[in-house]
Length: 295
Figure (tube, helix red, strand yellow):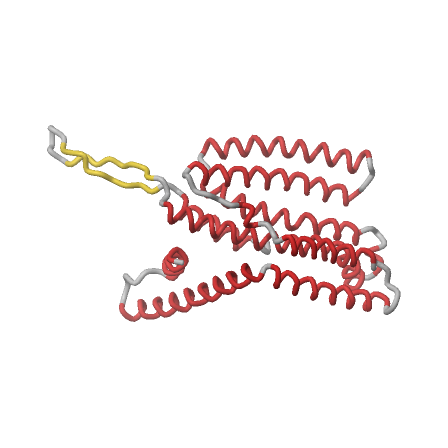
């Protein structure tokens, strides 16, 4: 639910930029009635549209990869203590804290699947969508096998179910990325998926912060509140390291945010003027998309 609006916007933008364009040509006249014969042909997406789609997709993937680092390093050691603070110890005594900690690994995969699946839904042909549907049956089979092992054999309970969902979601993300790479390669566009990965400094910081927080899972020296305060301080340091390590990307995001705000203001002014001057000035959505395309 949190990322659904962004996924819907992404799907519409990918469909606008990546789908083949239709063009009509007059090819002559018929002998019977001398009317012009019009044929419709399909042209591939323009290189500029593909470049914009690739840039937007890589920006989203980079953003999600950084969120994943934060979720995987900070979430599991902190989530059980937050649950204790909010819901009380009776919930954590049932193992809900461990399940919530495991769920922190699943949420980033869910987000990555959402944006990559939005691209597939916007650009895949009917045959490719059939292939995806068939593979989903295989992935469900893999989920069922892993769930049986984790729940039935190793008795991991609800945690095992979450891990089985992680396996299923990871398989879907890998296929989606394979499709994305193949789509851009088909049109001769270079999609550098490596650029969506975090910097090595960011990864090292995530590993180090995760190890520090896991090593201090006890609640001595201040109890639960003291532990959360110390964890919060470590999280602030981690975010600062990420901001420095990923400063180019952060500056790019800030520039995009300013551009989006400017587009909304321009669209609002245009809509107001259009209401005064009459129809024909265009909708707010078209203006925002056009501004985004120009960037």
